[in-house]
Image (tube, rainbow, N blue to C red; front, top):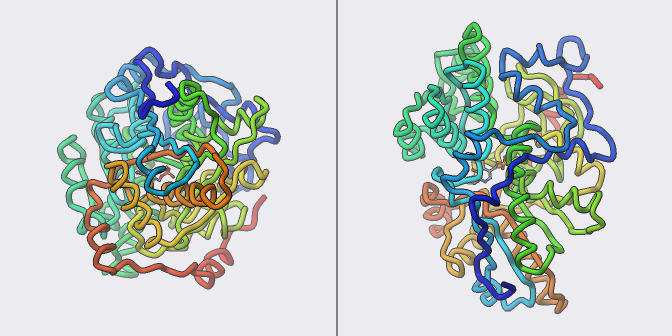
Length: 454
Ligand SMILES: *Cc1c(COP(=O)(O)O)cnc(C)c1O
């Protein structure tokens, strides 16, 4: 097996449980706070947004949570995904390192996001909810939730950041194929959208504004609609641990164990789902892999953000999360990795970073696209711009091995393909991509307006 190019599992090997790292944390996660009272939120505070099963998962300290039969059945559409040994990339880099990647681009919608979308749609349907609202940036999350809602028989309302709605029509079309209603955000549908348009009729929107609209649409529905979030929250990262649990089995097949584990991080869900089982092994299994999150220089919440309580959305309507943040009013520059343009970072990933259990690195987008093209020419897969951040870090690690002669084992998550991102590649080849400097002043501004709690 050691010489194989792909490491394949059977459908029986799809994990039967999600893994909850909260059970094994050396110190517990700080509570989520109510912005009015400054007190920890209870299940009832979250009930207008999420079904009780997901709220329980969000707060659960159980080590393992069973994956319901219908969700596991849905996973069989494409899971288990392959673990590849990137032999041609190793040769192209002339490195003694062994490079592996987990191919989450193989899902029907092209990314890891379906792992949680199907679970969320299922638990909502179980509690009698027939409609979900959500936001999407470039459209990856909207497509995943649209497909999952269609699968379990719910309707899906997606608030799509207006600039993407106009510039990336194909993801919008894809959501419509799955039967979703797609609205450009900011819109006149919600008070949050109206307020933004009144202040700036030309607003092209942001993820934070779209979240505010989707949350409002759910909260004001009188219980008919719930809200669904594609990243950041504990239950989302837990659903994504199917990735890392499969990788554990597959690395065993290779006869090697990773020295370095790498994933790109926007809200932290693919990185978390991929890396958290390795964090567990570092904590409880006597292993010592380096675990590296990769983010864009234009939105570097881990490497440059402050660890403090902040809102999850621009309009300051969500509860307060203790996380690495650039400030909820901060709007990241329009890099092509839309899924990485978020002011905050998953509280769980932020906590791991504070505890020194993971590392983080930030890159500019031209060097990231250069890595993406190197990878595509070696391995054939054209990665999403988000994913390309992880590839860049993996290539850098492999090149360090070339220098030192070390034969390290590098494993990264290929979170999605870039077939709907060809305009980004076109602009890269034309030399039109801007390497936005870290916006220190704007971040300082945004951080000065944070709530004083905790
Ligand atoms: C959404 C997305 C990301 C970033 O989101 P995370 O929650 O940080 O994983 C990364 N890669 C792809 C392909 C995505 O669609």
